[in-house]
Length: 189
Image 1 (spheres, rainbow, N blue to C red):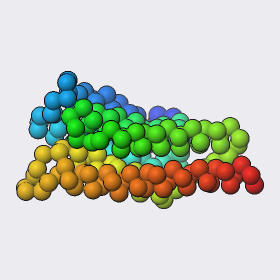
Image 2 (cartoon, helix red, strand yellow):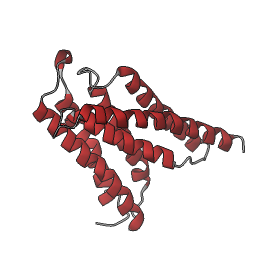
Image 3 (cartoon, rainbow, N blue to C red):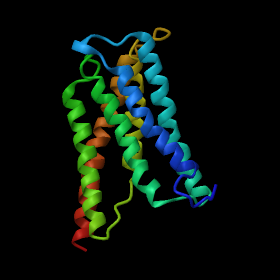
Image 4 (cartoon, rainbow, N blue to C red):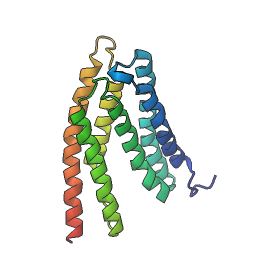
């Protein structure tokens, strides 16, 4: 396969991440707010975790082997947002996550994506910041733990997930403001 091909290994990993979203959603679907069984929670958490880890590899491979494509630049951040946002939304009916937290997280993701789109039309690039990357890691760990939710080896996995989610929520707000201020600074240069 040509390394400059749109369907190179990094982009295939990104597409895998996108294709796992509906499967995670189906595993977490629960009618009428009932809880999600342990087996479905475990399966969803494993798939979510494996899918989240592909994000580490696709970027590394793309940069290391000069396989960066426009398609990858577009789909990679979208895949991360789809996976985390879809999973966290599906945790609301079972009461694993408060809806207000989800609104802040999803709202920030939509806002930053819109800002980056507007910046792009102006010929500006607002690169991902270390705050945004740290936010993604914290949210992924938190959401993964909340998907599992059941105690393991005496560890309160729900509490652990909420701690990571709260830390991720703080970075969500902070990094969202950082993107906004960097956008304003670029516009008025």
